[in-house]
Length: 195
Image 1 (tube, rainbow, N blue to C red):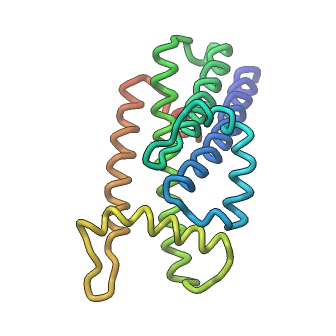
Image 2 (cartoon, rainbow, N blue to C red):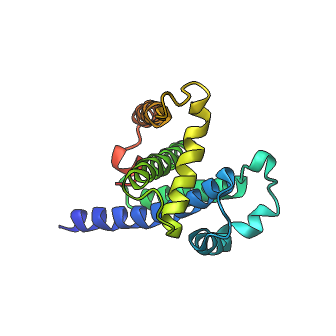
């Protein structure tokens, strides 16, 4: 019973730190995709995550719109989580392994953010394309930016945009490749994807 309780606490800690990481990564994509800053959702999330990232942003420049401060914060949140879990004996502490696991976890969380933004954005564009709600507008902006590079290879044909299909395929391929890397690195899959 004690082991089950310890495991439950560990996964609760991981889930909380994953949520913080996801929040930071979402605002990373807000900046990368240059979504409408005046959207109240963007402003609210940015204000919250800036509590963690603003001081670090002074040290890290943002070339090409890449907010490295957010990536560093997400990385250290994951590293801190693995460090805490190592105290339980559930995993053995080894600095190089922990850092590699943290990198893998950040990549998987970022890919999950993109995947969900893409699928929800596509659904809302079908169901309610003219809805003025800030969340709908934000998701449509993010979906458009995710699909933009894929439209170079797969332009709209007959008024139909097939780029989301290509985006899904590529994202799934990358996700599976990184999951395979996490398995090769010995990272328990439940910890690597935050489930």
